Length: 68
Image 1 (cartoon, rainbow, N blue to C red):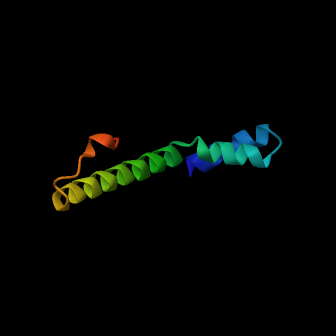
Image 2 (tube, one colour):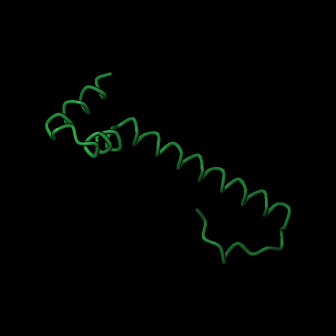
């Protein structure tokens, strides 16, 4: 709960504006880590799909597609 208390304290310094709460959440370590984990999972899934596609379609040239 220390993160929640820190967000609350910072928002109190800004007259408890809604935007202060949102910025506190978005800038928190927990939120940033969750976004990074989701992006990594999506990148892994995309790579797996490309590898699977190349296995089923060996003649397809992937050079024209950016590798993620």
